Length: 68
Image (cartoon, helix red, strand yellow):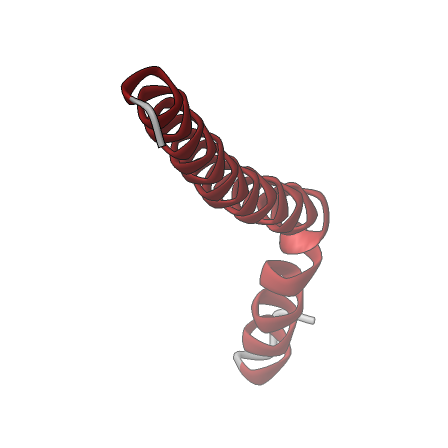
């Protein structure tokens, strides 16, 4: 192999390594975004239906104390 050919091969290896690293980083970021979206979805569900969950113990306590 000649020197320019060797340099070209080394450049291709560095480029390929960089591309693979970027793909790995992208998969990590995608996973993090997916987890964040799932957390936001769960929080919205708690905010939407959480009052019902809190209302049930309040009703049970009111019944227990004879208010209802």
